[in-house]
Amino acid sequence: MPMAPSTRESLFAEAVQQHMGIFLKMTYGFALPADRDDLVQEMLLAVWQALPAFDEGRCKLSTFIYRVTSNRAMNWRRSGLRYGRRLEALQNCPQLTLDAGETAADAARLDWLYATIRLLPPLDRSLLMLHLDRLAHAEIAEVTGLTETNVGVRLHRIKRWLADQKGDHDEP
Image (cartoon, rainbow, N blue to C red; front, top):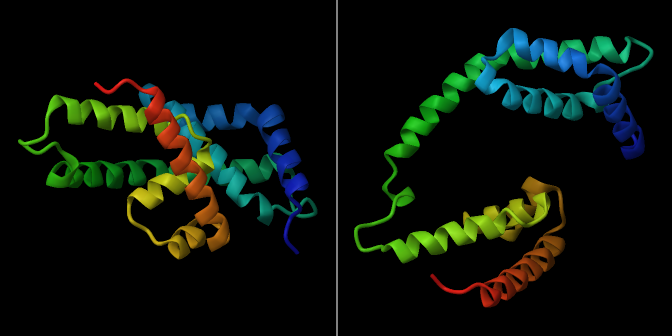
């Protein structure tokens, strides 16, 4: 039986409020100072995602958190190495850099676009980024768990909001 959203939220709040020390200790044990914030976020996300599998009858919440954070911390180095290799591969993608024909004004518009996208709520930001990657509404719905109709409506509203923002923005 799926966990009720309110139960999941209250368990997560308890995990963060009462057991943050677990997250921090595991982070200090596995990550360099520059990476600790990222690892804590990864651990918090991992606990959030794993909460539906939590069974109070089998173990305490703290034990569950230790299990999840420990697994995430152990995978941290491997995923970091894979991430580094992906970044290296991306540096060789010409479509991610400005062409010789593109100007500083093009770069400024792109910077403005990304800054404006970051103003959106997280779900809308994800929807727009998926749309900009040319995913179909059906694919976006599958990724986000929304209905295809809801994706279309939200994207329409986001585009209208972006157009309004562009009207308020002085062109560089």
